[in-house]
Structures are given as structure tokens and as C-alpha cells.
Length: 627
Image (cartoon, rainbow, N blue to C red; front, side, top):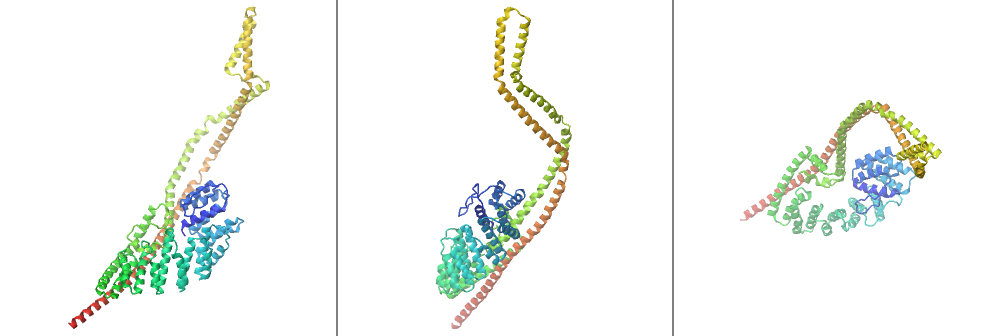
């Protein structure tokens, strides 16, 4: 399955399953998704990687979140996303366990419906169609329209596979308006009905798709496929006129244009309009020689000239066809040798290296001389899934290689920490500053006693500044001198001293309350600082005591993980090689089929060429006898 489609499904599922503080995560799709709810920052980081299509990193973050914070504020969102990623990576059993557990829990109906949806999808992918049908029919009406349309499409495919065509037809009425899933369902149903000889019913279904308005590239491509299918269905019914009408609706520049041109030619030929049949076939002759439709036209052109009694023209085109087939067969042999030698795998690896989006499909064909021969294979789901698995394995190996590179750094970090401890331990353990806290606590106690006495006596002089203390001492000295010298000449000076003393005491009294508050505040800060010092000292003593034991086991863990990574790398190398051989096998199978077709065309061309030679020779001989 495409992880891009999975991403849309999961985003919608997560959005509608929770409520709370809203953070918008924009998602560039044709139908704008609602706002995504994010309550857990670590989960938000996971979503970032998810929306960047870094699915491995998203999966890793989810597994870490599961261990660190199993009771996340995000509710069931991480669980649902984890199940969806397991599903995308093909880990069906793990995804099955997750969605089954969700269904068995007491959860809101929207969450359960989405769990049923993914469980049904799981069953469908594993081929358990009966279980898939039951799961998909257990869903209520809470799915968004585009997801419900996908559900109906899966059900329709199940009915088609089981030849329950009436059920599939009845299901088509349940799709929302202009749903692309309905168009896919109708197309599949139409093709299936034609295969079992129910041509009229099949054509009617295909006509619905063939008449679509080409709103985007997807609907244009589907419309082309439907027109082509209807056209060839009419050809098989010998209804050439209707066949032409539908085949001409296929885009001339699209990937199906060659088949459409070939069919138009056969339709005209069926009506004995041989000159008109030559027009699309001669156009095909000028197109890529690697296309099978082009190769078939090389036989159709001389055959048509034969019907027009233009035997000389037929001879020339048969000769041209034989040379082209021989050239193409020889090219195919070279291509098959190169594919078997790993040339195509090298081209795929280069394409992967240039593409930053690891999980994207092969939208840009690999740059290789092999690519034109297997373009049909590149568009098949079987190849795309094999290619995605191959890219996943390479990505995982790159991660393991990065981890391997990091092990020396971990070893260096551990060694440096041990060395730093050994260097610092003597210095720290003998540091005299560790003994200062006792001294500071003693000073603090004396300071606290002094503050309490000042507050108890309400003595403002206890909080005097240094200048004020000097002033008080000077006034006291002068008073002592006055007591010694009792002459009447100093009466005025005594009065002035009395005034100064009063002013100073008034100033001390006025500043007493704010100074007392400041002293208490300083005492509080000192207590807090001493408490911090005690905690730091206790922590330091704990480190000194237990640090050696904290280094124990890390070397063993590093060595064990090195061996584990080495073992996994070996397994990955083997799997990558096997997957590469599988891709090669798919390519060779496609090339062998092409080779068989070309050899058949070549044999027919040579037989026809011999027949023309014989016909021309017989005609000349008959003409000579008359003379």
C-alpha cells in the first residue's frame, strides 16, 4: 500500500479521535484536512517526522514515547499512529494486535470505527476477505466521507473477487458525490463483468467512468483507461464504430495513447477502411520502438497494404518489420544480460540516492538504457511494492552504518568521562572549600541572634550604618569631655550637641523598620544559599562515592550493541541481495514476455515476407508466360 495514502488516512483518523488544545498541521491535499490536535510535545515531534515522510524516525519516536510516557496526554493517538505505521511496513501481526486491542477497549465510537476500518483493511491485504467484510460492515457513520468511500471501494473489490456483482452494483449508490473511489470501483466492476462475458453490464459501468470530467491527472488517467477498455470491448463485439468513438477519447499524449491508436486502426480495418487504418498505424511507426503497440503496428501496416493490393509497399514494410524485430530482439538480449549483471539495480540505487523522500514511489524512471524496455513493469503495483521494500532495506542499512560509525564516539566519551573523574577526584576530595559551609553556618547563627536581640530590644542603634556608628562614638566622646570640663563656657556647645544627638537618634528610629526588614531578607537569602550549598555538597559526595560504579557495564553494552548491529547488518545485506534478485527476476520476467511477443511477431513477419516474395514471383512468372 502507498504510505502517502496511509498518511492521509491516519491524519484524518487522529484528527477526529481526540479534542483539546489545537495546533494546526497543514497538509497539502486536494481536500484540506481539519486541524490536528497536539497535546504532547514529544508526540508533536513524532508527527513532524511523519508529515516529512520520515516514517522510520516517526516509528522510532513512537516506540520511545511508548516507553517514556505510556500515559501520554495524547490519548490513543500514538497507538493508532503506531498501528498504522506497522501496517504500512507490512508488520501485519503487530498492527492486528494494536487495532484488535483498541476495538476491545471502551473507547468513543469515532475511535472504534477507525480501528474497525484499519482492521478491515488489514484483513483485506492479508486475503481474509470474509473477516475484512465483517470488520468493514461493523463501522458506523463516523468516518469522514473520503475514508468511508475507501471503505466502500474495498467492499466492492471483495464482492467483485467473490463474483457478487449485484452486491457491488448496489454498493455503488453509497459513495459520496464525485468520489474517486466510486470511479475505481466502477472501473474494476466493469472489467470484471466483461471478463465473465457480461459485456453489456460491464460496458455500462465503464461508460460511467469514461464520461468523467477530467478534473485532475488521476481522473484523466482513469478516464483514459475506461475509454480504452470500452473501445476494446466494442471491438471484441465487432462494433467498430462505437469502438472508434471511445478510443478517440483517449489522450494522444497519455501513456495509453499507443494502445488507443492501435485499436483505432483495427476498428477501421474491421470496417474495411484500410486507408484510414493506416493513418494511426503510421503515426505509431514513428513512436518509440520499445512499445509493444508500436511493434504490433509494424505487422499491421504491411498487412493493410496487402488488403489494398499494394504488394510492393507491403514487401518494403515487411522487410522493415523483420529488421526492426531482429534489432529489437538483439537489444533485448543485451538488456537482459545487463539486468542480470546488476545494471538495473545500480540505476535504482542512483534514483534512490537522488530522492530525499525515501518512501515515495518510482515517479521518475531510473536513468538507464534498460528503463524503456520495462516501463510497463514500473507502473505495476507488484514492482512498486518490491521497490519500496528494497528502499526500506537500504535505508535501514544506512541507519545501521551510521550507528556503527558512532560507536567509537561513544567509547571515546566513556573513556574521557572516566579520565575526567580520575583527574578531578583528588582535587575535589581535598578542596578546602568543602569545609567552609560549617564556618558560614556559624556566622549565620551569630547574625540571626543579633537580629533577634535588636528586634527584641527595639534598639535602632543596632542597625546603624558605619558612618552613623562613628557619629555615635564621637558624640559619646564629646559628652565624656563635657563631663570632665564643667565650665559654664560650654553651655551653647552642649545644647548643639544635644540637638545633633537627637537628630541622629531620630534618623536611626525612622530607618529602623526598613533596615530590620532588609536584615531579615538577607538572612532568608543566606539560609537559602546555605541550603543550596548543602545539597550541592551532598550531591558531590554522592558522585564521589558512586561514580566508579556508574561507569560499570557501559563497555559491555557498547560491545553487545556493536555485535548486534553487526549481526543485523549481515542479515540486512542478505535481505537486500535477495530483494535485488527479486527485482531482477521481475524485470527478466517482463523482458522474457516481451521477447516471446517479439519472436512471435518476427516469425509472422518472416512468414508474411516469404509469402509476399512468393506472390510477387508467381505474378511475374505468370506475366512472362503470357508474353
